[in-house]
Length: 506
Image: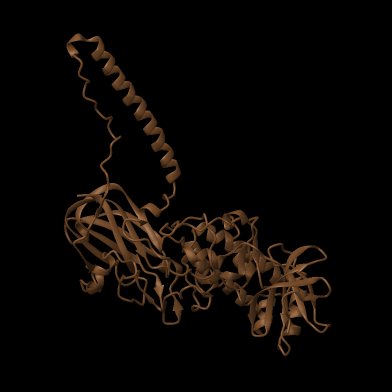
């Protein structure tokens, strides 16, 4: 049995076991001759595909495209067969998609790079056959790398009568995942399975509004091989040609310095929809312990753009102090010069906007499920709604479980909070589930119906702790958290709220 510290071919020192699949083991190793990190595959005795893997690796080494993982060595003539390849660092598409779907232009540009790499490999007679988000990685320098070409299929013993079509479909699947954060062929990638009508997954545009029709059509022609809309795209080159003119906007992965930074404090919010990607995990992290009522606000980091806002506020405060000081000094001097003024100090007036009314915690009177839309039954697990306002983040209220993320069933469902009286709401802290991204709106009004309520905030791709700042303080007795897109949880689409905290003024 091979152990860490073993050397192969007198130069490759095995250091860390990375993964093991049915007798094939991937190690992080050091090439002591060239003093560089490499990935090394070794194979257990009796592994049935050793010869095929070594042959596929040698073939992949001849692909002349820098986006394809380089193969440095492959040998099965000695007592221990091995394959040595480039050690890839950076972030995979799978890691990036744990934060929700990507911007359409970025998604198209990144998948276009992968399509061109696959086209170069296919032209040499080498196919992937196992494309999924974990196989596309961005290096610290921002370059795209496609891993597993040829080798992954050989490791698993996968073949295809039409490998060209299989790779074209795989590229379409990648674009589908990048745009929707769903996988169109089940859940084996770690992404939630795309909802389907029969055996056909929903089109991306049905899952996420705003996806350009052109990208929706390219996916239908490649992933689903639809004959309409210009005919199916049956090769990687055809998909690459269809995406040839999209912008190449590659996100920069986290640098080593950034990834070594301490983790964010408990209660900080996610960066919704942004491309500034912190260190991520290939699977969603476990639920963080949440601070109790009154402490989450102190632990929360400022939202995006807060640094500029703080600088502006500081500058305004300095300006206000100067103006105030000058005003007071002027009045004092006028009082000393005017005998009729006497010795009394003049009343000071605070400049407008300097003293802002302090926010206070607002205590809800009650909460109910909210399902007033056509097709709704008027209730949504109201018996558990109080768990979202009980001050205990270990309890939660959830919507019903749906077979659809809501886009084709109803406009939305949610939680309706009764404050007991009209209040002014300025800030809301939501503790959502970490199971997956959701979209929601915050509505405020004095009546229990959506038509009379004002939407004060819209959030997309939300999970975990989400702080909401109401730009225009709004008065109302009722506050609704209205889900318009639900995350997939254990095969059903369901929204969950662990806690709602509100601040403002009565």
